[in-house]
Image (cartoon, rainbow, N blue to C red; front, side, top):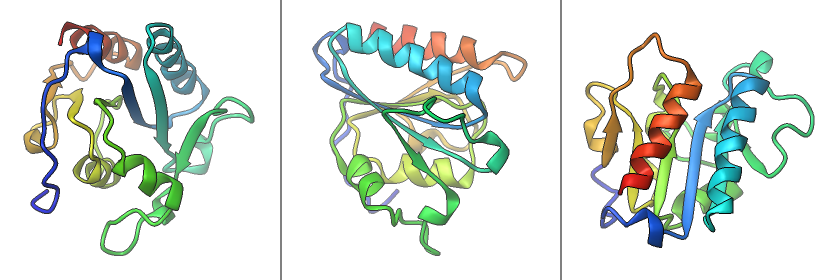
Length: 160
């Protein structure tokens, strides 16, 4: 985090142009829910890019489910934690207005993306001890579903 000297700000959602949605794949249902939120934001005039992490083979989405989304796997990270995949490196270096992290759990890989991303405002679920990685954290109970998290992230992002 010390090397990431990006000037953080809370842009107004109405004026924002670009959004990066980042999440860990957990199969087709989560991909479909994220795509639904992506479509909703695009109808509001936002340019939405989706980046997702596949931790296990069984979490890979079916063919065409992830169309228009960029896939990342643990092998795309160097031994020191930097992203090696050129397209993903380009995505995280872009100055998105918002980065929305749509996961119920954080991992070392999600931490690495959050730390390296150049987005102006980083939004996600509250994870104790990870406060420095986010500009807005939403408290969600562990027993809630991903659809509830996505609804809450959208609600609070629009409120900015």
